[in-house]
Amino acid sequence: MTSSIPDLPPLILSAGINSTGYSAGSWNSPGRSWNRFLDYSHYRNAAEIAHDGGLDALFLSDHPALQRDNTSRPIHTFDPIVLFASLAAAVPDIGFFLTASTSYNSPYNLARRLASLDHISGGRVVWNAVTSFNPDVASNFGSDPLPEREERYRRGTEFIDVVKKLWRSWDADAEGFPDAGTLWDDTTARRIDHRGEFFSVQGPLNVPIGPQGYPLVAQAGGSVQGIDLAGRHADLVYAPLLSIPAARTFTAEVRAQALAHGRSAGEVKFVPGLVPIIAATRAEARRKHERLNGHDGEASLVAAVVKRLAPALDGLSAHDIVPPERLDPVPGQRGPIGFARSFRDVAAAAPTTLRELARTAEGGHRLVVGTPEDIAADITEWWKSGTVDGFTLQFPVLPDDLQLFVDEVIPLLVRAGVRRPGYVPGTLRDKFGFGYPVERIKSA
Ligand SMILES: Cc1cc2nc3c(=O)[nH]c(=O)nc-3n(C[C@H](O)[C@H](O)[C@H](O)COP(=O)(O)O)c2cc1C
Image 1 (cartoon, rainbow, N blue to C red):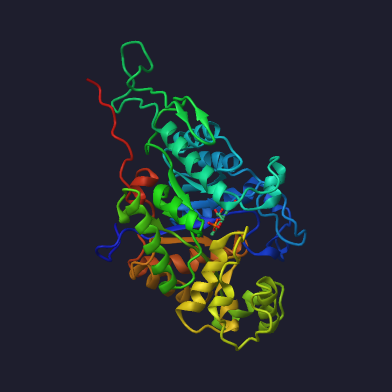
Image 2 (tube, helix red, strand yellow):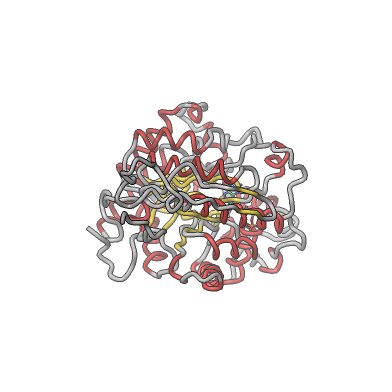
């Protein structure tokens, strides 16, 4: 069954399954073992819950460095390719939205690993290509200090160009391998002979085109360079979009860049992050939000936001309107532009008090705090408005909040005709409505 809402593509829903959950204190959650992030069955259980709910994909972000805050959950312990390879063998249908850096990998190696996983999973991989902004990652790879954004994105753009050339370099014939006793010939396996600013790669890749051609590409950066990269390469954009007007501005910018790169505006789908904080009543959900952040009330929650965005918000109190220009990126800012920009866009779209801003986002992603009906209504409103194609859900505590979403919110979305139950057959490109990305060579 397809969506009962005409003229709209399927609503894409993915579930983040990093570690013990999205909330910093999730590792220490009552009734749950602190070290479940080291237990494969914890991830498999989360994947199976997501599969029961018919979610489209699992998401893993990645920074190959131990987080500095030793009171916070371990964010990125297992390598996403290793974890997803084991889940692909255990859980059918669901896709794998996998983060890997263009600054700290080599294109041949990553192209091969991702293409391998795409074959093994039957065409279920999305590569979330990031340029890495964490100085500790740079130090772990002998690249201290972190290169400037401009250079990271130049390298990232060339990296993805090379990876895509490699993914297209061995076409194993749509009708099957040639039967003349050769596995490949010069028409099916082609050298790419890439010579660029950062990489020299001969090719072809030793993994042929796969069930969905090759993995989809996602991108999350919100700077001018990030938007350009998204316009050039991204099938899916996973940016922090905190309000519908702000999202419209951002998606229009990315679509304009896609057109500038000779693509069609509709080729890019938007699946921003969303943190649902669900409870039986709104008041309970607000308390849960405060508790998850280690606060005993709203005042301390607001104070923490001021501290995090200092010095931009210094001197403001809870009921003050936040002047958007206070959140403008600082010239020469090395950290991610996308997160700060998303807050500024919300404050610019409508007068927003500091108190409201504190309930707007969690770790850069949009927050929705409320009952299952509130969450379902919010998702439906955004999607029906045509602003986004879906959401990448980040659950505060795993597996509890994922289970709550599957039990309480998914049935509401299905009943409203926004989601179909279960899975349609096919690769992830088929499910998300993307075409096959290459012309296949046909046997003579
Ligand atoms: C929602 C979101 C999720 C991200 N996840 C990761 C991640 O897992 N690993 C990483 O290295 N960077 C991640 N990034 C960083 C971006 O890919 C990008 O490198 C960073 O935002 C700097 O680029 P910008 O200045 O264009 O925003 C994420 C960014 C956003 C907005």
